[in-house]
Length: 394
Ligand SMILES: [Zn+2]
Image (cartoon, rainbow, N blue to C red; front, side, top):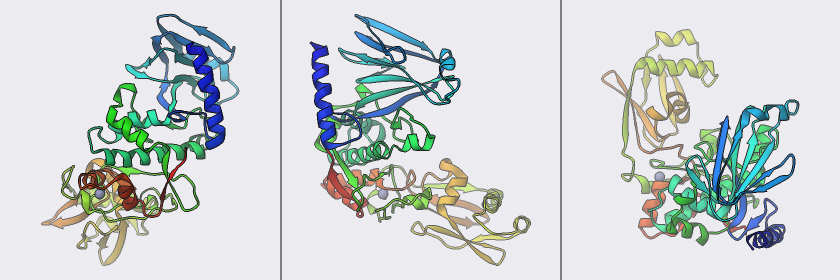
């Protein structure tokens, strides 16, 4: 019966998919997203009730009744792709009656075992409907107890980010081969959750905005970024990572000031400031004679949060440096955000700032403050993304 139902759902999903979105088969809870949940593993153990295991190379499907653990020794896959130097889909596992366990987390849907390009380790990929993925992600990337309108704004942002990765096949393009996944569950992309992370509230935030994403003026799904707290203004992607993305503008955000993570004040030595200047010269961000720096008198001009650049005097020469460059050098511990100013008081250098994260796109603390004032998710998104519009894709 379960098998028959699965076939019907599968056929239905193919019909829906061909009709609405040519990305992946769609289900009642959106198109299927492929998320890498484990990487570079030597051994894999997957367990669950009534597991079905499909070995792809031999097309061997085996079903196990009751509880079963299936192990893979990934080092044995080396011989499989000696000459190909490409990842291989080794096996798929599914529990027909419920959840499947991997590394103490439980997942719904399908788990795929994929080899590394050289075949000396494995990745694990969870294939799951988009709206389930979003409902599980919200407590990880935001906070599942926040007001529903803030969660809905985050749901649209995270869905846009994921759908952009899927439709542009960005991961495969970067790797230069079929990656077998659309995005990974990590800080690099988005931290996804597992089955028990979703709550009624986060499921509602996902389903109430089902299929909604932000698009640019050409109608393309936008790569939507978000961060914890901008500290007063948001930035465009090209100001932080050099990648230009259509539609992005930096906006003022007075909403997050005085809320959430506290302002910070970090003391640094003059030697570190000079090391930064050496680094900037070496990497061609700054044209200056390296030898001239050591004995130079370095001063900083009065500064504020709103400025994107720090103005230094190195001896009598004025030099402007992007703040995002200082954060790239000093790191996220010294500079938790890109919203700061540098000052020198009684010979002591310090960075004074507000905010947490890169500052591009949606400011989560700002969204929280807006939702608390009664703004709905559309109004929140319009504030941070005035150059994008909302569209229901499925
Ligand atoms: Zn903000």
